[in-house]
Each structure stands twice: as structure tokens, then as C-alpha cells.
Image (cartoon, rainbow, N blue to C red):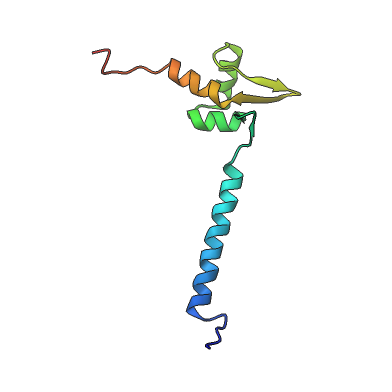
Length: 98
């Protein structure tokens, strides 16, 4: 039976793989938004990043009633389904319009 030390190729590869797995798990937990009754609720940052708009534009959309939101003690949240609905309602298929 061969004894492996910390300089062994197998041990080095094992720890590299372990680091990759740990980084993947860390990223998954950071990017995961928990659900409540099957619905994901998104923050201002998440919605503005998703739609590639500024938070000021998002604030205008809230004020104009363009996007539904929930506000609790100054914290603003958006149902993911409402954001997707907004996108669907504003989808224009160029092939149909020709």
C-alpha cells in the first residue's frame, strides 16, 4: 500500500476538485433566492440587473404603476412572476408585424 503525502498528484487533484466544489456551492447559495409558497421574491438589485435598467428607472416604473411590487418597512420586493408577466406583455415579435 502506497502512502500519499501532501505533494502527491492524487492529493493535489483531490483538493483542487474540493475547492471547485466549495466555490460552486458558495455561488449557488449566494445566487439562490428562497421561495415562499412557490413564489420567488426579488430585490431592487436583482430586478434591475435582470432587466438591465437602473434602480432609478425601476423606481419610476413603480411610481407609474408599470410594475407590481410589495413594500414592507421600506424594503421593496417583486414577485418573479410579475416581472416575467411584464416582459411577456411587452414582447413584440418582429416576424408577425411584417
